[in-house]
Image 1: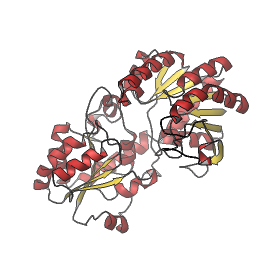
Image 2: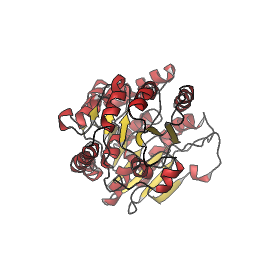
Image 3: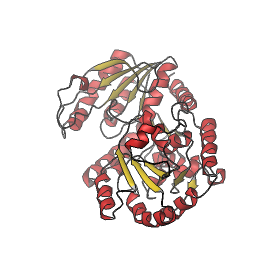
Image 4: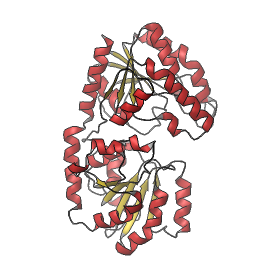
Length: 393
């Protein structure tokens, strides 16, 4: 098949996640894979890599061979996204006709979903949407949130199929008008995300000693991340576990707020900030830890989520304490004892209990085996390719 994958991220700058894995695995399976992205020029850019086409790229698997095609934009912050919205219809139509695409597999909504649906209907090309986020919930500006919700309600009834990653996202897709929806969970590559021995240079760089009991938060730092609530509990954790240190790996709009609160609470010697790190370095940072956490506040937006970082960290053999998101409870039922579920207000006590548990490492080992058996990217790619093939007939 000739498969066109469409997103609204900058393919080369965005941290590696599902679209990168699947596109490259599709190509390894023998299909011609093309990706359309929306380049991020920063403030302003004349960098030629933001324009045109790049052949034979891969970011995860060496044998992969993907063609990346950038949406034409005006490379100025604040204008680039609007220009991509305007150019998408004619540009995508040209690519589909030129490359003789058999099926479109898309992730985006706000920037180009309307254009994609219109073009696919004109050219009679099937389009499948992969749904694992409610995009309008991720937008802070009220006007834009309403506009994107309107787009979601417009395009979901027009998708030939929707593949959600959890039953909650399946239910939401149907609420938006999707007529043909199935669930295929996300995955992880256990050959990339695997247990490693701690690197001494990294320990030294981060000023972590052999006595420290490191707990890691990985990922986005936004208002729903819950780190501000966890910080309030750290003095009590330190009383019970003096060797405790919190390693925060990631970034986001609330990073500076968390850093400021750390200073206000005089916790600088207990909290380490790294900023974003390359996806393939996640196992290195995980290797430094006794425990990992996901402190997401449970609300109408987050409750549907089953964050991919949980899959990655389990594959690294880590024990993880999480808030009870319904998406996670579906993938990792409480009775399986793969994750430790805790209300956010009780996270401090849960961390103390886990760090004092001599069997903590065994929980992580069990989690890795569970992931390898049920959630491989190879299996996910095969299931989605089957859906693409059937709808492209």
